[in-house]
Length: 533
Image 1 (cartoon, rainbow, N blue to C red):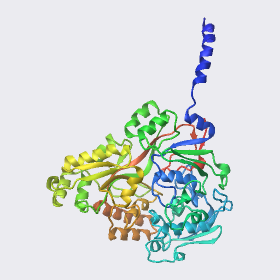
Image 2 (cartoon, helix red, strand yellow):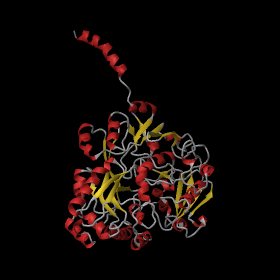
Image 3 (cartoon, helix red, strand yellow):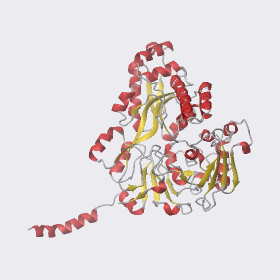
Image 4 (tube, rainbow, N blue to C red):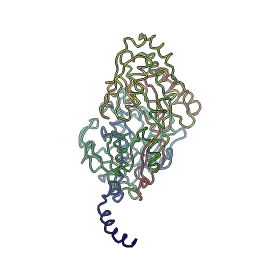
């Protein structure tokens, strides 16, 4: 009887097997294509015009800095576009020796002159690069960017020959190799940029298909707006033999719930994030996919201090004192931690905890500012860019209504409009976050200086900037960090930003993705990743 059943069932099993449809992930595994959820459509792929994490994920597949990211350690310095480097005794002068086989994806050689051209372009006042401050470590770079000097040859970067780049710094920077892994330090293809306009022209056709060339492990092959961006192996990459993938497809899925469904239905290898309210469910039902990792990032409310009322630090302090960070982290952003200041603990640096929850003190400050019991307070909008930010925004909205009797509306914009609104100060308040670019407190503290392209608050303070300059001249880490704590304390007194939490990375990853390891900065080198079922 059993044998008869088996014989009868055999054709049915074969029929069912033939009807089973291969998932998108299964096909991608066969083809060696990594499918990545990337949250939003990039504002641009010209890496000198962007500031976001969304863009950086794609850019780091197409371009490479002097030093490359390591798959296992955030602070490891491995050869990238440079094969080797050395520095003087106080680490103010560095020489990088480029890969002799380094080429752009069109086969043209990558030279030291491409790096000099790139730094000239980003720093040039006419170009108005939003992230130019990342190059201020170069001697005279800030003065050139601000128009105080006009001769770029006075800036501390020079091509000694085609494959030798000399860098002179305004201060000792022992972590320079880590800095050069950030896309602001990447080269641009001079020969392609100048085919499509002047050096200082913005948003030209050099950085779109079919013109875009890079020096990274992959090259762009397709860009379907609001669908996906696909990159394939770059055969001209100097280390092409070690690249483990045939390609990567980046999907701009803004809704994290949609992204999670796509992952669980076999359409993605990894997600950009996992909504906090789904963490427990996934941990229970799909634990093999869940990744929860320490991350050097802070979330906060950014304040436009040029707005009436918000220009008063007492008002900003009142808003901060009525944010219950413990409640938000416990019930809304699971896996995050209440932030007592802006900068997360990094090595031996830990800021002085200054932020508390004190509604009574907040009401007194608001009354002192002229808004007794919230009377006469303007109605402002709180800007968000992603559905996952709405729950936190609504919690903050409710806390301000309850404790201060003030009304705030929530305004949603797409990623590009959200970024542009802040860069032009065309907003009131915004839910925001910052991810460290390297493992030093300056990655969180330097941006709040006057004119910084990532400040976007309208706030600056000469006392704060003086402290940062003093810290930069200290070689002793203890003295340096002590000054940083003082500077951060001043920032938290002024409150142009209202820190809420220190973030962790909660996301989904399939087990066949190999070479992907926990990293504080979440900068996974794409060339090290492979797919193995």
